Image 1 (cartoon, rainbow, N blue to C red):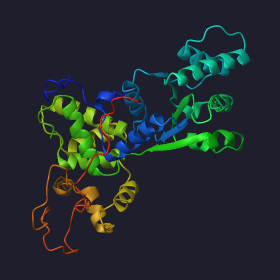
Image 2 (image 1 turned 90 degrees about the vertical axis):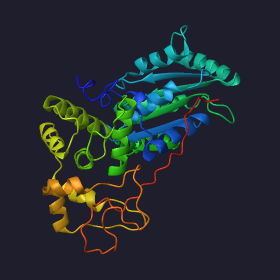
Image 3 (image 1 turned 120 degrees about the vertical axis):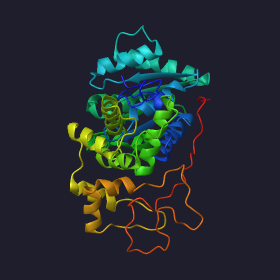
Image 4 (image 1 turned 135 degrees about the horizontal axis):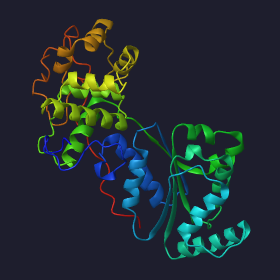
Length: 356
């Protein structure tokens, strides 16, 4: 609805896990690099956990789209499976049809996986929302990890789910499966306003915008506070804010619009949460905590929030270090809670062309 108004070719903030809109922030790079390493080196069982909305499914689909043709992959997105239903998924992936009981199935499966490994082919089973798997199915997954030779796993399995998956694997009855986990990855929320600004800007660029500075610094700051850095929440706030701005005929979105949208979505941050977030901000070289008066001012004063512009990647501080109007380093001068953050972000992963 608002695409033409903002000069977009596609909607940049949908809630679907579209890998086209993946943004390679440092925290996301770490997870993708770990997944790539685990699959490339045939680690066997990989576990990826993360809070709701942090982008686990998007990462998996990004990986799936870039698998080499020599990799046979199955993606299970419905974890509420019985043991028979689970094996039905596996047999479909391997195109195994002639079997009458579980013992015969496992024998045929072992031969198929061994032959694929001998030919240099990879076999990967990815299970999303794995925290919903029953203990019985998880035990079957452990047994599947026995398909191996002296020096390699013939089947690689990726389990991804919410933090409850880690708790589930810590159950005493699943300790044997826990010991089979070769690699653990954790998907984090975007940790600071810099990464949120980068996330929003790059998704606008991917959507076709030639003017990605639609959101003011104050708006981005408040999006970070409301979303707690969770990408799905950021998408929801930005999408609704752009719709509201379109309805109002405004091409620049400020903090006030975000406040209204966050209120409608029941995403306004609690005052206590805001204070916690501020005290947790990491600075290069030192950690700084705002006074109670400064926190109150940041919470209640919209004008000050608009001036509290973070050090974005595209901005470089002046030679004298006076990037935000404070040149003498006097700690008594009021500063933005993000003034001291490093603006230098580097990527450590290149486009993955496939696994060999």
